[in-house]
Image (cartoon, rainbow, N blue to C red; front, side, top):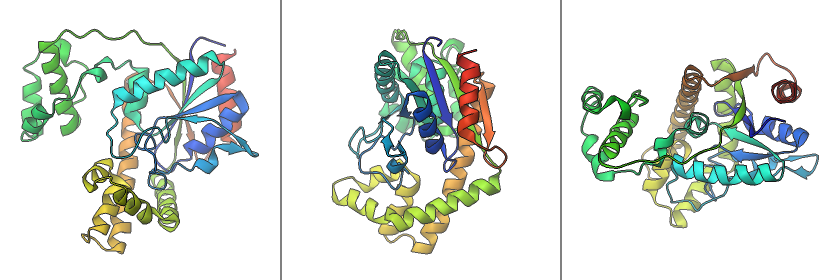
Length: 309
């Protein structure tokens, strides 16, 4: 076995990542580490698709980490994820367990594989409020005023990421930044994909199931227990649109239709980010859900070729 193995299962929402990761963990003496930016919160079960019943094989529980980890109402950033991840990874490695990172939050996964050291730079809320008034062209022009060394790896694809890039550049201008030494992983990345039509069907089926399981009641319970509507809107997707429904801004039919569209758009953004990861040098072994059979066996064979031969 090579040093610091890390098996990663990624894919867009509703692609079956958890089911595959659990099967691999059962076969290879592994444990799951979640790479999902919302499953980290307690009590946000239906809306985030935790599907905790899937974490068992033949009645045997498969251990998981970074799920139900903190209270809802908090914000959880990529650097907090990294610190929590390294702690779990080190513990599993000492136990000779295979760490299996599973999720669809590409930024979390990419930050580990590409050693994104600047995630430790703190947020500057005052600066962000000021920069929100600028459009993309203005933000790009402002970023160009900073030295190349502090902006050469910046993601300029969205308004939000440009603001973060400027925030980092300004911090580096006024502070000395020393990155922590980090583990270099021997990562095997498995990706799940499908046609857009297939993915949309799965998204709709899962959305209908979540509504039947009590998605609306879950959001109501979070509000009753003190989680503000503003932070639920910040969590996005299911929580954002259910809050709008509970506030009387949309009816049930509009809730279902707009949420379906939003989830499909989110899945498209996830795939775009995964393709960006590939352009940045991350090798992803893609399995097509419509073409491939026995994904568990194929994943195990891939694992053996990567690590054992």
